[in-house]
Image (cartoon, rainbow, N blue to C red; front, side, top):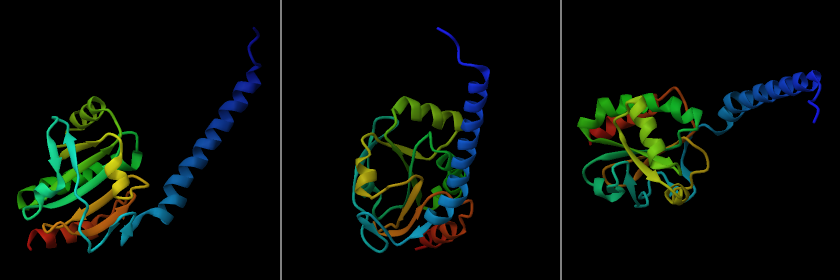
Length: 186
């Protein structure tokens, strides 16, 4: 069997590099400006309406129900995956929120979408995140919430009502921080 000429490898490399640059541009600039931001409704959820209840297992195997926090805590759900670059970019900000407001009634439920528990656990431990991670193995909860892109954040108040939804990553979390601050005082 003969090897392809060197020029074929060079052309393939150039095409791969060009495609990578084009995809990166689409994700970072074109799609970012179209799809990122707060929305009033998404799939089956709507701001001002009760959040659908669910129960998922956490990394320790314990059942975690959204309704268990009703009347006690504000819940910020983050639908994400380890392979998602924007999800990973958002996580330090989530950790910052968890550190600042956990003692004031904020619970972060980091809802991993379809990855094996060991893989997720290794990632969380390696990055030293301390917020609560639950596993949506078959992505049923993501589907129930109408998640079509990750990261997706959903903020639920102590009464179990959806107060804020954001699709995509944004380095500016001022609106979320202000709302969390307000809700922790209610």
